[in-house]
Image 1 (cartoon, rainbow, N blue to C red):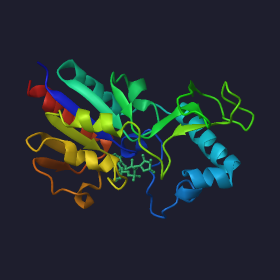
Image 2 (cartoon, rainbow, N blue to C red; image 1 turned 180 degrees about the horizontal axis):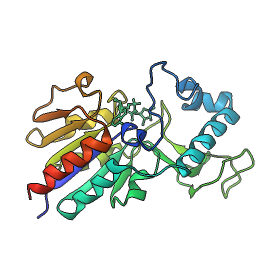
Image 3 (cartoon, helix red, strand yellow; image 1 turned 90 degrees about the vertical axis):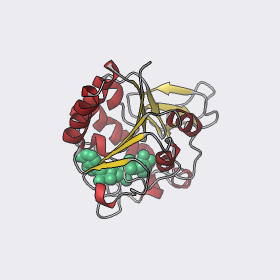
Image 4 (cartoon, rainbow, N blue to C red; image 1 turned 90 degrees about the horizontal axis):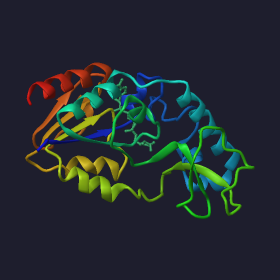
Length: 230
Ligand code: APR
């Protein structure tokens, strides 16, 4: 039976594709306070600002490509059972070719009803104030905002509990519950953390090896190592 690899990714894996990470030096996200553009309160206060913000991000996403980090993870599937759990709302893992991708924080290329969250639509255009679900209610980005439930968290925890190898790439591990997945991986499992900022990330976890590298170099290197072992 193939060994199970679970990969938790964050904004850092897409940074070299040209998508900015969240927690930059000034604490702003593309010039906005996070709570203005990524919270239910922000949406109530200024819906147009939120729509514009995600419309810009969607357009940017459609203009960028997966990088060597995303692509290397696909290679692992030849010898391992691989699940990618991502905090990212981009589709770069899917475009690289990963088969099993669980989006913890939603997907930018989907829109959903503000009335019924089970009404979800593929969406590649801007979302405007004219766009309604089939029941006539405003559409919003299919994104988990601060203060909202993370519906896929339970699935993610169950998957992580079965990992033989757990790999964390490009996340500051500051946002819960996603960050807690590191502690759901079995204590005997081998764990790797790849991040240029690896020194400053939590490392009091059993069997954790930190690799201070960017995704496009660190991930292909680790994949080569893991492929040579089986
Ligand atoms: N390769 C790998 N990692 C990188 C790279 C790179 N080229 N460049 C930056 N990083 C690392 C940073 O060092 C940092 O640890 O990526 C991490 C990005 O951290 P954040 O910006 O906090 O992003 P993330 O952890 O994914 O944020 C979690 O917060 O705003 C919410 O919902 C949003 O999913 C997001 C969540």
